[in-house]
Length: 238
Image 1 (spheres, rainbow, N blue to C red):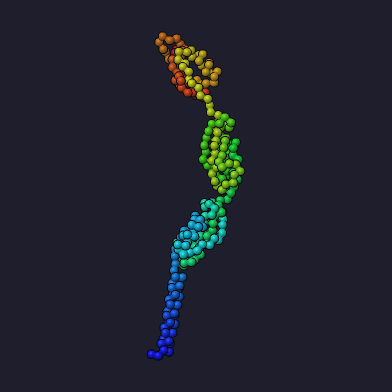
Image 2 (cartoon, rainbow, N blue to C red; image 1 turned 30 degrees about the horizontal axis):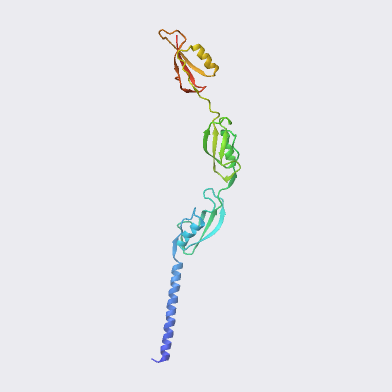
């Protein structure tokens, strides 16, 4: 075989190999471009979290909008297209919409309002009643709001719950029950009424060797803590 024939053979061989590799490359690209993957669930994810999950699937993210949302906080994904578990070709663009957070409303001033009125005030403001705590207060009548959280005029998300501290009124004073046994019932009862205590019941019993009208038993017992609305029962000799 002369030099010219060798050169022509080599040229044809080189062209053939180039065509072979070119065809193989085209076939590979067609195969790869036709490969499909499952779209991951991106709801509630941040953009960075979503991009990481999509990169693993050879997909890309495109932000297509922002809108208010009651559930997801600002910056979280609230919608995606195509939806999760859809089958798409690799390099497909996944469009997402981000949360702008909840609609903001101004907290009304509830301090000094009656608890019965609070629900309607909160409803009108787009808010809800939260936890209620109670405490005695000499300044606020029973049933009035003493404090609130969040504070009045604060801007918060719509439908947020507002916690309340409610007055139980002034704490009534307590007294020590004196020992009344052996004392004249008439004088004791008069004195108790002067001090605005209530004698709830009088019982009369025979007691040998004791003149009538003397206290022989009492309830509450001596030394007990009592308040002015506490009922006092006396057993008196007859």
